[in-house]
Image (tube, rainbow, N blue to C red):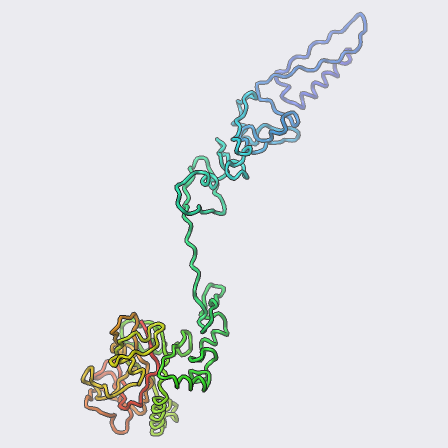
Length: 460
């Protein structure tokens, strides 16, 4: 039997090396008695008694309840596994918290509604552990949604990522008012009859048209049919539209914003604003179409002046035609958005001029005096014409006329000549220049057929 003692001791040492906890306060191995008289059957060494230890036992994989795989402290994360050994805690933090707790003290159980350590609201993510306590929810988002709040009549705002929860900081109140919806742009392509949105480039800059084709069309479209491009040096796509417009005259045709004619007129107005006040913005431009009789009389006068002066030979227009501004009184809302019908008032100077052109017969009814006699006064200065423009009816816009004038051969003067009834002999007009009696230029015509309203400009 003595030969078996070393084998037993070897087995005990092997067990002690595998389970270090057994080496502390181990019970002594009982002595083995050796018989001296009669040989007996070999007796195996009795099993070692259980080891008593003040430290909590370390459960071995397979020796504990396999269904309880969560940390004994936080009950939210799985226990740490080291090789074949499963520790009772998930981390050093939980192990430090669990020190001093004996196995006889059952760990606190999570709420029955929490799905064993899962968030009590979403039931999808583990409860948050802040190092000192296990919170009821996984995040501030779930915590805020679970708490009752005063009714606001609007659903709470849902955010993409929940903020990190810290136990030491109270959850901040979230705004439950929904952001107002963004207003969708109602802008459309400026080409007539197009309802598509305008083109937006890669930088977010919005164009006036939906495409290059519509831009080209919008800039040169026929003012009557608004379908085909106009012909060169004309406002119409062909003789048919031109004849139809003259048959309907007198009338106003609105020029689309962005049209080459609109740009041309607006730029002349801006360049001709010479007063120190800020130049207002041109809002609308209308092409004035006179009656066929009025157009014929003007063309005849222009031809006669050209025949005398041969202005085209020197590179000027036929009859030395120029565009000049004229301001007058408006009693109605003609020219305001959508209003193109003339009023019937005989004292509305604006409608009278646009319908029947200028009339020397009304000279002197307002001022009783003319610096250069009895004539029709215009100016190349838009701001000077603005001084004579007035509204009787309430309107945010003012109106001036851009007229075409047969200047011919102009007589330049700087001093007043109020007795003139016609231009000096050999001249077709009088050009009042600045520097003498005038602060701003004037062009005076003494024949009704030497001037016609060409455009109505609305600005403000």
